[in-house]
Amino acid sequence: MGKKHSPRFLATVEQSRAAIQECNITQFASMLDDGGEIVVIDVREQHEYDAGCFEGALHLSKGVIERDIEKHPISEDSRIVLYCGGGFRSAIAAESLTRMGYSNVYSLWGGWRSLVAADLASPNQ
Image (cartoon, rainbow, N blue to C red; front, top):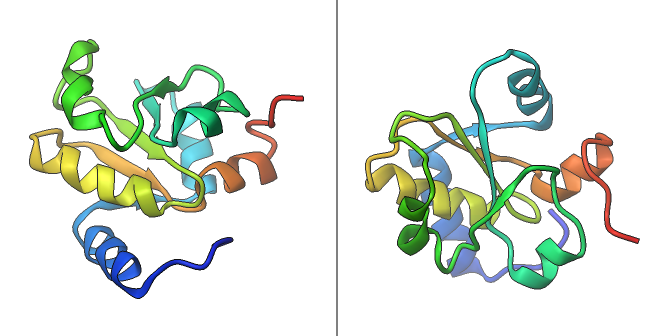
């Protein structure tokens, strides 16, 4: 999406994407409006989160999400949407949560950039 990534990283992302559920920004917006429970988790690094985040998002960076998710009241069947900068790291994290038993996890394809482009979030000034 915006950055040049290594071939091995891209291969890992593609393996994860094949194993998980994804949503695009239009589908995510529909989830927000459908009245159902939704847990939004920002898996970016702290400095990215500090620069702006989706309002109400829980911050659990990709490096600690498996360790720390159970510290929060999130059931295994909760609808969870993960986002990162563009959808790569969140895909890997979604696969990991799925392996942990969370059954309704999505990765937002387009991530933070799509949230900003759709006016669902804005960078901090």
